Image (cartoon, rainbow, N blue to C red; front, side, top):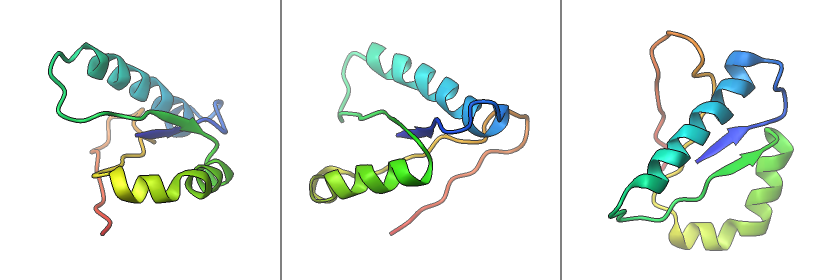
Length: 85
């Protein structure tokens, strides 16, 4: 699960993501019997993602089942998700 931290003055874009992700992390930490492990990453948008992938790609390909980028969740619009294969 990632959230962008590069433009904190843009409330819906890069402030809502870290706020929601922080609370999701707190909720996950309280779960007693988690089936999976979780990695929470706060990174700058483009360059942060590129650097993280370049340093962790092989491990990620072996171990990751799903990934989520939490962004633009600070309004009352419908939320969506995309599936990449």
